[in-house]
Image 1 (cartoon, rainbow, N blue to C red):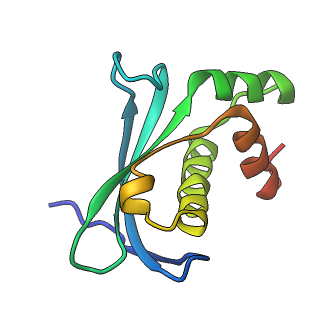
Image 2: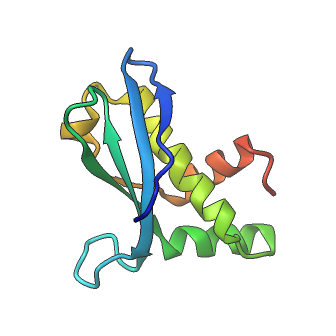
Length: 120
């Protein structure tokens, strides 16, 4: 049995979200975001209904970041970018369940997220 660590985030829209990381995988070949890595989080804002949120980190965005910074991103940096994208959705979307089930990280957002952590 896998024990998951439930975490809490208070979003700017006034909702308090609970979430946990389910895992990551390569995006399905026929997915419009492919080629990408898909990070999956289970999320709830009411403790009754839990739903999956997928964060897609396209390979082109990581390739662009790597070329600009002269090194590849490590796994922890990939995860950090996905988690910050999830937090951004919590802060900006009125209804994550209906508007934010599939989120993507483009090159500009990746640069912004990692810079906010001091990653260079």
